[in-house]
Structure formats: C-alpha cells, structure tokens
Image (cartoon, rainbow, N blue to C red; front, side, top):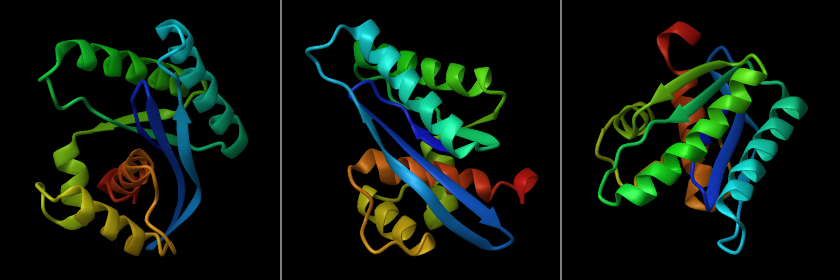
Length: 155
C-alpha cells in the first residue's frame, strides 16, 4: 500500500506483486475541506486509511517522506497527515517503509529528478493502466507502492 500524505488530499494505492507482475488492486484519494477543523481533517484521513487497510489487508505501507521546507506551516501540517497515516498502519500491524521522492523517482523512471509528467506516464505503463491516475496524489501513491515493491527486501 502506498500513501502520498497531504491534509487536503491524501493519495493511496494498493498493489499486488507476484514475481515480476504488479497489478493495481485499488487507488484513490481521501479529501478534506478547508471548511473542516484541522483535527477533524486528520481524523478523516486516519479513518479513510484504516478503512482501506481493513478492506484490502495489505502487508506493507509505504509512505513518502517529507522533502520540502519552503513553507514551514504547510510542512508541519503534511507531517501531521503523515503521522495519522503511519498510526493507522502501525495500529493494523503493517510493516511501515518510508521513501524519499528521489528514491521513488529513481525506482519508477530510473532518474531521480524526473518530472511529474514523466512519473505519471511511467506508472501508467508499469501498472498497465488505461488512464493516468488522477489527481496527481493518486499517481504518486501508486508510485510509492511500486517503489516499495521493487525494494530488494520485498522481492
């Protein structure tokens, strides 16, 4: 299971890897509104992730590490969204793995500085999807899941 944490949109993607074959089980986004209290938004993210875990029963949760610090307030809020995502995984006894954006880009495209567009095209090809996953957070979550699936210790 891959998670692209955010407090407005948290992308998720559940994949299944069998040998060299990787397939998408489900993907989507948990969205929250600016009209909601921030604590309620975090709880909604937590509940959404827990619901997905209980339905699909993944073994591993891969979460993107924070990479930016231009806006400290935003970084702190994204960090809190990351925290509730990880909490949902730990509570449900998942193995938690974290990957930097650079690691994910390297795993998906072979180039650590790939553009969003390059990443989306590659994840569409890798997972044999008919359309590019939208919003971007969903494509990112699937990329994180695939990156984890390509990690030596899980192959």
